[in-house]
Image 1 (cartoon, rainbow, N blue to C red):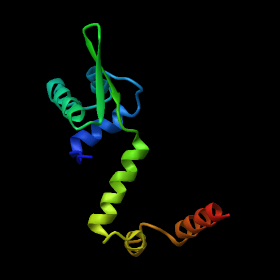
Image 2 (cartoon, rainbow, N blue to C red):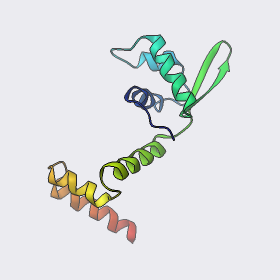
Image 3 (tube, helix red, strand yellow):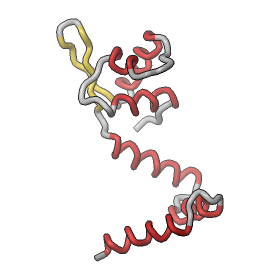
Length: 119
């Protein structure tokens, strides 16, 4: 799956809030929206990359997310771990713990979650 630009990812985060959407629907979610034509181009690029699909309803193009958010997160995080943490989730967790972005309580909670899944 092709990597998303920051702007494409921002649009996908908005698109996942809808079952079906138009460019206008996405555009309406912004407080400081990009130009409508820019947004339309981003959505077209997402379609070319396979992240959304479209169908014509009357004179309107209706888009649907073609990949769910959970699947994208899994792929994104796998890529981050591979590229920045030598394919080691342990190294990633250590990085966040050392940079005080994960507390001891957070780590205990993670361990509890893992142990519950093993039961």
